[in-house]
Length: 336
Image (cartoon, rainbow, N blue to C red):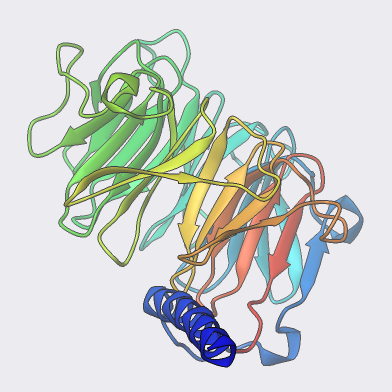
C-alpha cells in the first residue's frame, strides 16, 4: 500500500509538471534566432560606447533594422552598422534636444520632444511643427495606425490626429500617455483619467472612459499598452501593483511577483516567442512566460538598471531595453 501511494504521488507531481509545460508551450511561438552567437547575452551601450546620453525615454526600430533611441536632453541616437550617430540641435535641425518619443514610418521618422515635434525623411530633410494655440506641446507618445494615420499624445493637451488631411486636436486638458491599435483595428488611448476606446468617433472631454479604477484597474493613470498575438490588450498603470489585460472574457490581473515592488509599468512588449516583457520603475525588467513572471534586476543581471523605461523588439528577435541612468541594453534570447 505504501509503495502504491508513492507511485500515485509521483504520478500526480509528474502530471502537474506536464500541465505547466503544456501551458508554457501554448504561450510560446517557435522561431529561428538570427543572432545565435550572442544567444542569452547582454550588451550595454552608454555614453562611453557612443550613446549621447544615458536617460532613455523611448526606443524603436525602423524598416531597415536601425535602432532609434531618445536621449532626453542629449537629442536622438541612431544605431546603424554597429555605430551610434547622434542628432542634436547643434548638428541637425531637430526641434529640441529634449526628445521624448520616436516613431519610424514608411518614409522617415517622427520625433517628439518637450517642445513640439520633428519629421525627418529618409533623405535627411527635417520639418519642425508646433501648435501655437497651446501653451505647451510636450509629446508623450506617437503612433502610426494600420491605415497610415498619425496619432500623437501630449501631456496636458490631449492628442493630435492626422490622416493626411492635416492635424486635428482632441481631449485638450488630458494627459495622453500611450496609444495602441489592437488586432481588430480598434484604437486604445491611455490617459491620466482612464482607458478610452476609439471606434470611429473621436473622443471629447464628455466621452466616458472605457476602463478606470472603478472598473477594476489598479489605477486610472494609463501609461503603457500592448496588443499581443493572442488577442489580449495589456495595460500598465502608474499606481497599483499588478499588470492588467482585457480579452473577450473581461478584465484580468497579473501579479508581477519575484521582487516587483514598483507602482509604474512604463512599457509592455511581446517577444517573438510569445513572452510578455514589462518595463517597470524600481522593479527592473520582468518577463512573463505565460506561467510565472521572471525579474531581471541589478542584483542578478550585470549592470542592468532597476528603472526600465522602454522596450523594443527588433527584426531579429533581439530585445532592446532603455533605462533611466544606464543607457541601452541589448539582449538576445537564448537558443531553445
